[in-house]
Length: 49
Image (cartoon, rainbow, N blue to C red):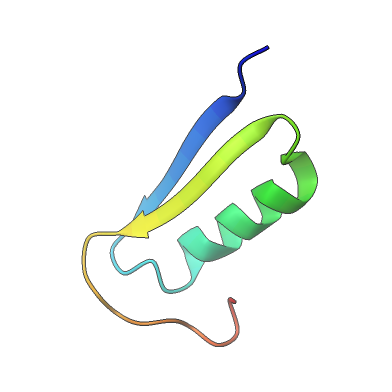
């Protein structure tokens, strides 16, 4: 069976998209391939990683 593929995309990939990626990997990594990305460079949010 092919895994569902999801890309969470936001402005800076500094918080929300990273959290969404992390939760998706944690809860459904056996069923979903997931990535996150941003369209601008904002750096990492230390509370999201």
